Image (cartoon, rainbow, N blue to C red; front, side):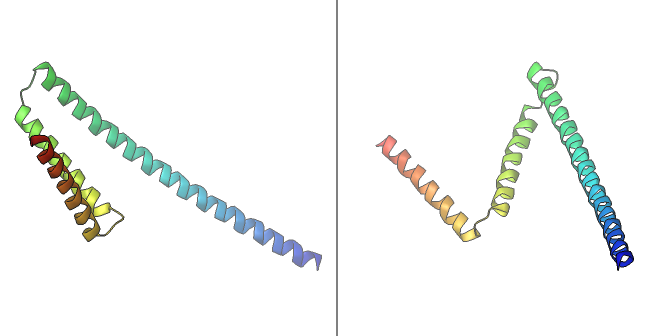
Length: 112
């Protein structure tokens, strides 16, 4: 009976060790992925900041292109936000419609 119990305990420990190893591998892969993504994001932010700095200092005059890119980024961000919203499309449209209507009313009140 003791030898069976020892065998079962050894098998359990081996399985735990293997599972622990798999968890470590998954965590390591996740950390590597996050690290790579952070490096890419940092690199892109650095390039954008460099371009903005040169534009402000007058080294390159791409004002129109930068403005269009900025507005396109806002539009893209709004589109992604709408797609990822936790509410249905109809609820989002109704919410946007109500906000636009409220702003229109406020503008009318200010003008009148």
